[in-house]
Image 1 (tube, rainbow, N blue to C red):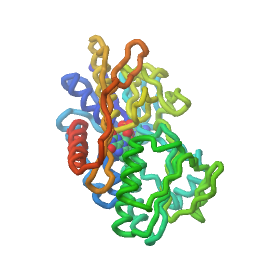
Image 2: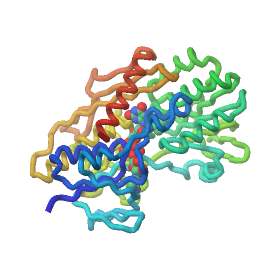
Image 3: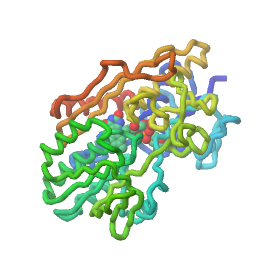
Image 4: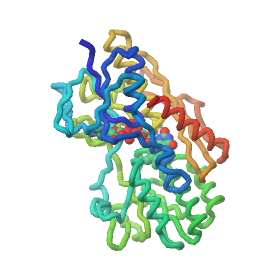
Length: 396
Ligand code: FAD
C-alpha cells in the first residue's frame, strides 16, 4: 500500500511541505493536509494592513491548486491530539486519521499566562496581538484609525526568540506612517523586553529618526508582567507603568499547542528539537516538525522564508526514506526578510545556512547575506516579488 503522509497546518511550512511531498514523489505519495482556515492569509506584508496601505484580501490566497494540481487531500479541520505510538491523529470533528509519516507545522502559540491579566484584556478587546494575520489585523488597524489625534499607541515585544524578529519594528514603522498622515500629534511607545532591537536595529532607528521624528519612543529592557484592562495600563518588573490608548501586547511565544500536547516541545519546554537532516522530532519517530515551532539553529529566524526551506528538506528526506534512497547529506537554506519602513520603501536582511555534519546543525555561511544600506522603493518591488513568488512556490 502507498504510504499515508499527513501534514498538519497549511501555513508557510505546511503548505510547502504538502506540495513538495507530492512533487518529490512524482505525485505517488498520498498527501493529506489538515488546516482549519478556508484560505491562506500571509503574515508577511500584514503590517501594511495595519498601516492602512493594503487590505487583507491582497494577502489572501486559495488552497485550490494544492488539491487540483497536486492531488493533495485537504481536510478543513483542527488536529486536537496525536498518538505517536499508534500513529493516529484525532480531529476536532471527531474523525481519526492514520499516518505513516507526519509533518507538523503549527506555527506558534502565545504564552497567555506570562502576562497577568492578558487573557481578560484580550477578551474585552483592551489588548490585541494581530500576530497571526486575519480578523485581528483589521481590528488593530480600526483601533488605530479610531484613536484620537494626540493618542498613544503602545507595542510590547517579548524576549527573543519569537515569530519574525524584525516584525514588531516594521509594525512600528507602519503605525507611524499611518499616524504621520492622519493623526500627527500622536505618539508610539515601544516596550521591548530585549536589550536592543533584535533585527536590523541601525536601519530601523535611522528610519524612525528620519521619517517619523519625535513620534517614536523606544524603551529597551522593558518586560511587561501585567496589564490592567480598565485603565489600559502596562506594568513592568521595575519601571513605571505605561498607559496608552491602543495596546498591542505580544507575549512570549512557544511552539503551536499541538506540539506541546504531543510531548514534542523538548527545548526549554517551548520549542521542538529536530534532527536537522530530516526535521524529524528528537522526541517522536516519524513526526517531522518544521517552521516556527522548531528550536532554531544558529541565527536562524522564525520566518516564513525559513519555514518554506525547512519544508523542502523535510519533504525530500521523507520521500527518500520511503523509497530507501539515501537522505541528502548537506542541505543549504537561505533566508531574506524584507521590512517596509513606510508604504513603499523597504530594507532587508539576508543569510545562508549550511548543514554542519560534525555538529549536526545549521551554521551561517561566513560572509553570506547582509543588510540593505538604506530603504529604497526598488526593494519594495523586490519585497512584493518575494511574496508573490513564495506564495506560488507554496500554493500553485
Ligand atoms: P504558520 O504560517 O502560522 O502556519 C501554521 C498553520 O497551522 C496555520 O495556518 C494554522 O491555522 C495551522 N494550525 C495550527 N495548529 C493546528 C492544528 N492543531 N491543526 C490544524 N492546523 C493547525 N516571515 C518572512 O519570511 N518574511 C516576512 O516579511 C515576515 N513578516 C511577518 C510579519 C508579521 C506581522 C508576522 C506576524 C510574521 C511575519 N513573518 C515573516 C513570519 C512568518 O509569518 C512565520 O515565520 C511563518 O508563518 C511560519 O510558518 P509556519 O508554517 O511555522 O506557521
